[in-house]
Image (cartoon, rainbow, N blue to C red):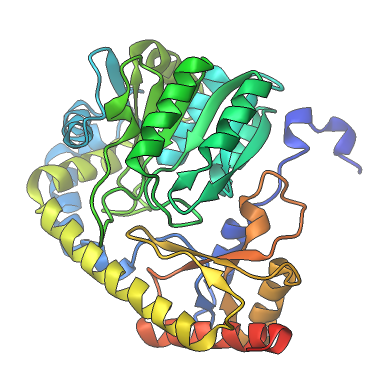
Length: 398
């Protein structure tokens, strides 16, 4: 049967995430995956989580396994507000909602604020999960190019001037997939332009804790005096992605609507995982844990960059992150990163993500690809980079 005639119009443009597909490959232990966006599993505080889970189920199991409130477990909300206040991301009229991962927070915003053909500005390239979420509500996406210090502000203003833009979506810290950080000046400028052209900003900050070099930059939310910024945070990168704990901090009017949408989406984020996360924030040495994570990622990032210097052709360039999990590789236009990724899997069992996955036009060929350094040990990183370098040298020369 041909189901296309039954398909909702909003579902037609959706494509499977290349990253999700890569996770299937990662089930094969022989694959060197430089594709995912997960933290190093060796950093998961498994002993603590096992102890806390047992304690919760023994002492408070009836509550942990029951239905909860849609906006989240109150003690966890208090702990998350404390973390948001550490980066001045809470304003007087704001509320917080605990979400099932940061991805859901973004999706709730999209379902509350975006109508068919509403124009949304995103960084080009940008996070595939957000792009698909916005596609699912039939938004019109316009990509604005990235520079070394964030979105091109001249291009952004031209886009805002010539279009009726409703939202700007940005990952200002250690951007996914580029790994770059938006400068303080550009954060101020983005706010100024949002005010001038009357649009809202989604500030997605899942990687902000993972700085291993350079200086912290103020959140866009902390600079906002008009209530234009909706702040999305996550515990996936400092605790565990599998617990699926994210949160949205925004004006109460937006959060109230988002809560209703979440109610019909999944009712609430599981109480057990919320209670586990709460105990992690209350009782674990979170800052020491983050410090250790940053040391691990900083060392792995430097090692991968050194390997790229050693094995990649001179005509290939890449970003140099100060934190987060990703490096974006830019190849000459003759390189088709999608075809290269297939060749890498087939011939070398090395996985990475082609750049078209992060584009507003997913069907367009890209000469960029994203590398992840967080999950593989150093020997596998070198083996993977050496294989990619060999393929690139064969196509481009030295």
